[in-house]
Length: 292
Image (cartoon, rainbow, N blue to C red):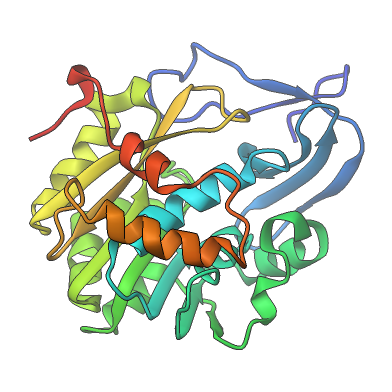
């Protein structure tokens, strides 16, 4: 693990314009977990500002003070955009954060496909603030295999597919989840009014990463949109998700209807970041980041 003598965690340089130009470090307090699975290394430690920080292959996934931002924004904009989401697929997300948020909706079934089953075990023990025991919900089915293999076997099956991968570094198992063949299989696995969402990149990498993902989605889906969120534990400012739909124009949906559904769910569930207003405003992009 890249920890300096002063007990700082030095994040791995990742693809994009920041590589070899920016280094991101965190003061390490207590080490919570340090080890390797068959597929990746895992490091969880405490920081005096961020609380527990969860890292995979030396890249920060989220921290205790901002995981809710990431997980609420990858889930709720797409589930609320769908008129009646019942059958959900989550690819990745072994920390249980996206699962926790999806289960706030009256869904019937959630398939969680995590290639690294050890991540779920580690998360259950050390990342309860993220999953909040969502793995034990009776609506959840857990599968351990590559997401691209799983989705290939499902046709006209899901209302919403949430792709929650790690960064698509060349030496990892994530690049297939950012490919045109994978998006084509996702399209086939969705029902006629299905919606999907996937991780994007920082807006610093709009031209070289985000726009490329958007173009891939538009080759297959009639509707696609980029939306924004901010993660304090990331060193890149605003980050992005990309959503795509078979039927609904995600830029022009029924926000009055969403607000009514949201208010009903908010009586029983906590939404710390997401709201219908945040949903709508997250899709407002400056001219330099707009796409046709």
